[in-house]
Image (cartoon, rainbow, N blue to C red; front, side, top):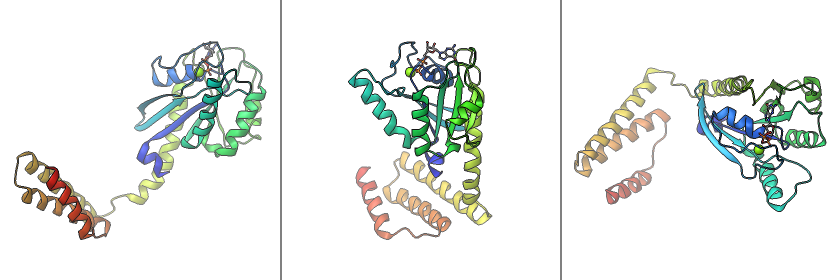
Length: 254
Ligand SMILES: Nc1nc2c(ncn2[C@@H]2O[C@H](COP(=O)(O)OP(=O)(O)O)[C@@H](O)[C@H]2O)c(=O)[nH]1
Ligand SMILES: [Mg+2]
């Protein structure tokens, strides 16, 4: 989970060809970045975009649709890449074309996903919900053995419905997961706050001196103060060797 804090949310959009993945991707990022087409197998290379929603940095990736009878080598390669990328996503938008009956490809992909991800990391998007719906929520859930842990949201990339709901859901879920961690790393007392304060003050001072062309010795002295404030906060002592090698490089680099 600390991966979310370090890198933000990494979401993959998966589903069979023509389910509407690229259209949804464009709706999520509010741009026409991915090519939308009725011709199956159009998306070959994964297309990525980054933005912030409700305070959560998100990287979202449109993938090549997965189908069993890929026509050519390029498509086969992109499908292999899609499969291999699944581990890197914190969450998956699994897109189903709800205007058509569930296909063997939907089932195959759902089986593959559930073998790789926990149900709470899969959000099922019943897309094309502006058309006559042929897949009920119960049908969709049956793809995952009826699991109640899979969130289902009806979307229409065409009418821009369910887009905000899907992003809101994924962000509030991420925030819940992060809250638990935040508690563990909170600055809990004034001594710790004081250390952080001293650390930032010393760093600022070092920067000022450096930019003002002060002699290295003064800059280094401030950096040492910053480090010792950090040591006090973490309870660790930075080894003299590390300090020496940092300053050696610092002085040569200047
Ligand atoms: N009616 C309707 N058509 C859609 C919707 N989303 C996508 N489409 C159409 O479905 C086709 C395939 O869309 P695309 O986004 O390229 O699918 P992908 O292969 O999963 O990336 C295109 O003709 C889209 O215009 C939707 O929500 N409603
Ligand atoms: Mg596509």
